[in-house]
Image (cartoon, rainbow, N blue to C red):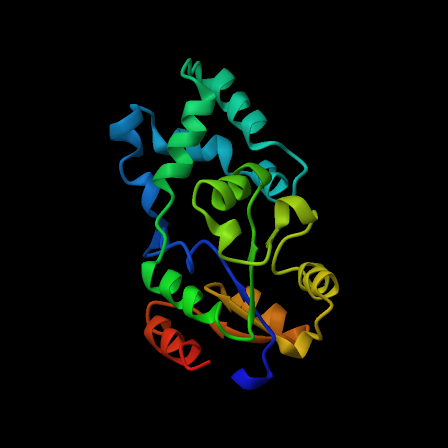
Length: 205
């Protein structure tokens, strides 16, 4: 299988970024202690259908945050708030970083395929340094379409000019895996139980 792969498309959150434990984002654990803000109230206002619009680039995350601040009388600096959010949500998988470095010496091209808005995508590229680790970052906030939509995978293959069956998706969400397979991609479901095996398999390139 691996000999037939030209491109590995890495998911970010839950794969390259180990920021999810037991289906919960790590960054929320100290939210109330650090900020003195109710997580429940914040989440109720932020993570609605409007947040889905952030993920496909139709709404700016800062504008959504500003709306929350107005409703809750939050007076802190919103740019600092966003930086806090992004920094607390950054948990790179160092084993995968090492694997990516090894793969960079093979014939295999590497990209990131992620559901993220434009602001966090820039943070991932610039502050976390992933723009230097992959050929490009395919982010839903730039593309206007998110996984598991078939259009997301079609956009990637068209942009790379690679046949679908020579693409390999590494993703932690089963719905994304199934959609990629439906589009003719290869795919590996990245979970706590499969993580070590996937690293071993990819290390054999």
